[in-house]
Image (cartoon, rainbow over all chains, first blue to last red; front, side, top):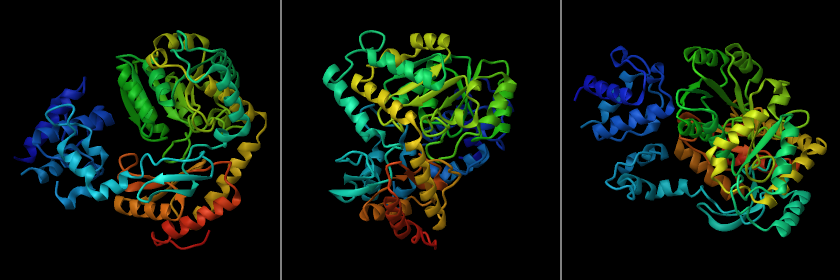
Length: 80
Length: 424
């Protein structure tokens, strides 16, 4: 699996959780917060993505992750 | 989960249960929580007190197990009203008269004369038309926010607001967005981004994990510019801030600009419950639509009678508040002299921030309890992972000797292991 494929999974779950988001405009260099995600939305997107990838990354390791790209890179480290 | 990874995980990691059945906790959660290192950390939760929440009390549980005397820096009993003789007597008299429970929800059989009087007295105290009582602080925020907002609305909350505010937003169906903690420019930007929607802003008087206070004048300027009401949660500031204890709104002289005044009866009041004060029309509406108000058993009448006495004792003069603030100054100066990081705290809630290591936090917490200090560790995810901490709740009941003895222990078991020097 590539980082780009993980980014697409994150974007899919972002779309599922935010009512008014145009997913084609989402940049991986941005934060989910930039598109109106609140803390609960982000927990949902992160959890749903990890479930799909069958990984469990400690939240404490995600605390400093600022962008969707960095989140995908962190997930990639845990994908076998 | 590999043994070396156990301590990287926290309660934040098992929110979503991916097991086959809803009655089966996640398999790795079971393994994680039974690891001896995690079990030790969890043993700090739900430690039984065996006496009243005074500065000197008795505790069991934790890693030590046995019942033992402690200096209590953890209870919310800011003014000592939970154990004030007049308050206890009022509760005892009411208990004998009314019995134990309210035996009904407020709208049906659960309203007693004591509830009506307390609501009137709290409304008068806050300078508002009306007040409604809730059976808990959590239920108060939950119900008030759920009752005021609906799908299509936007609730704009400070990023450090309490879980009850967040859950109220979820229950209401409104969209919840947060602004950077106490940052008026961020609030302005957030409100502008949602212009055209029905909006409400929620901030807290004193933030419970950091002990800092809302910058109300600047935040209200932004709210006023956008014509959006401010809901002020004074859970930790009621009876503590302001010339007469009315809270942070009184402290800043901005009470008439606040849309909804929320408070709890479980902190400085020394009992349990929540209350909301505001204009009569909105309180009347809220009573009809706040589900936690309608569908909870009302507060026990004896507690309500005690809270009336708490209000009277705390407002007849400033004696208790002055003692509390003298204790806050004393404790703060001791902690600062040791070089400890107390963050932005300016209130009676004083964190001791120890950093990013959960293992170190628990080691320090064990040492504190071994020296007879009841000082709870606050771990991630309750606070950010890089700022794990202890939290001191200063009480007016502490004597100067209690504060100095507790400070000496803190110096030995926290300041020295952190490599700090200085003396209390």
